[in-house]
Length: 182
Image (cartoon, rainbow, N blue to C red; front, side, top):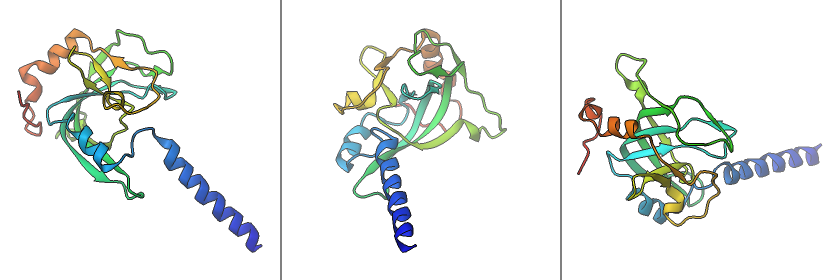
């Protein structure tokens, strides 16, 4: 009986460890890696979120309000937590292996009167978040930092009308938005 309980405990412990290790590619990193990566996420910057290896996922466009390095509570691993405003979302979820531009986006609108549902705080996986490059496209954050990761989509180009709406003066009307530094 005791042996059966010990086997169950060991199985649960091993499964818990594997789920942490295999759940994400670049969610947990060294403190140094997170601090270096944080420099690419200033307040006011635009991120594109898309997990190209998920069965299906929406492509979302976020405006960073604040990003910080946080301890995960697991060994010596850290993560970047991003507080962001949801701006746009693909009209339909994209199935794995079916990403093809142009993607049709819709503006995310608040369902609550105080617009609090437009904001979220998440720990990001560097493999599934895209940052602007010098050419105006969005590239995988992990790859832009020279980190090894497995993604099906390495670059995302937003439609011109989405870029124009992001850059419009009305985009920062909400007082919760961080000022955009130019």
